[in-house]
Image 1 (tube, rainbow, N blue to C red):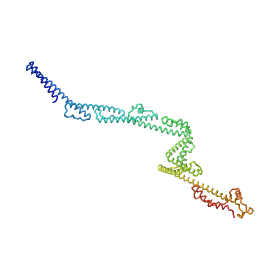
Image 2 (spheres, rainbow, N blue to C red):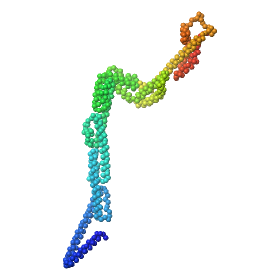
Image 3 (tube, rainbow, N blue to C red):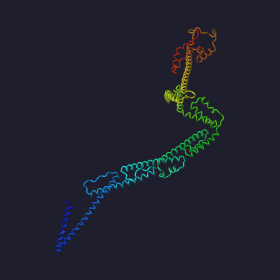
Image 4 (tube, rainbow, N blue to C red):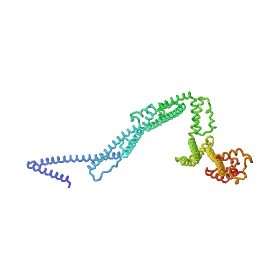
Length: 563
């Protein structure tokens, strides 16, 4: 039994007890039955009215609960639709009061969530508005009147994060570009002219919008400033080359050049103006000293002729070079020609340098070859002989390789240009072949000269040795009557030839006789040179062998007296 039922039973018992108590009181008093009935009816009516009032109140409460449940259900349905959440039905077996409380609690939770979402949306909208003002971009597309879903809020946050990152990137890019603009304007001595330029270089970095258009405008401004800077640098460099060339031609003192050195490094506007003024001044001075200038240009042209290996015909083709009428027109012709030669040299610089390298190596090779034939080189004890021989060997190997490489480069160049590559008016390989042939002929001539000189020296030495031996034999063993029976006396024979008698007197004084010189030349004088000995040692050995077999009998026969 429920406690409420127990309380109800006790209420009924209490009411019966009260009625019995009233009845006893009424009997003691002696109230008649009619009055007892009336008073009992009054008690019943009071109790019934009280219970009816209580029942009405409870019915009203019940009705209010049902109304609240219905209203909560309607609100809950609307909130679930706005917040895009599912509306879960109440569990079965719940009382009216429990249902009302459950629905009311759920409505309060959803209302709170709705309020939070709206607040988050407003905060995101404000942040997006600020970013749009900075980036000059369109606002995020979202319905501000409706309650956003969780997915919409997350997408909105991602958009805000992306915009914030873009803002940081653009701000960093803007700062870098702004620094470049300020530096370039400083280099060009340029003051801001447009409103945009003033906003860019102004102190307030937030004054300019970080839109894509402004970033592109900044980049375009930098390109324009860089173009102007490059143009200024090119103009300054052209003026510097022109000034340097005029300084050299006019022989400007070093002190005057040093005073102008500040403008020969930087390329600001003031430097450009100073360079232009200096160039104009030097041009005027050049006209006053036109002859000296032309002579200086001619010296440069002569140097370029040598560098470019131009032939005499090619050099003579520039007729103004030989003119003696020094006019401004002649100067202009020389300027054009020297520019053409410089361009020609730069275009073919690699080939010309390769030819120069070959010539330097060839010159060194000829010097080492000349030293190799010098007998005095054996007196050098410093170790240079071995070094020179090693260097000569290396050059002998490297020269053909260099010639091969140059040939390949020249063939490529000739195929591309459609014309021959000439050195001193002739083809390079022909020029190289002529140099090798000249070298070979010079070596052959040197060997032939050494052969002839050695042959003459050896012949004279051999005759002198034979005559000296004969003279000593006469002095040490005078002829007797037994050994030489047919000796002529001065009275019975012809007087000797004055030359022979003069030679005999010289012999008696210890000088060699000259009888062998009067005898016709022996067989050694009839040698025919069919080949040149490779070395001096081989030549001397061959000559000594020939002299020992042929020359000696002829000399002895020429000195034997008649029997």
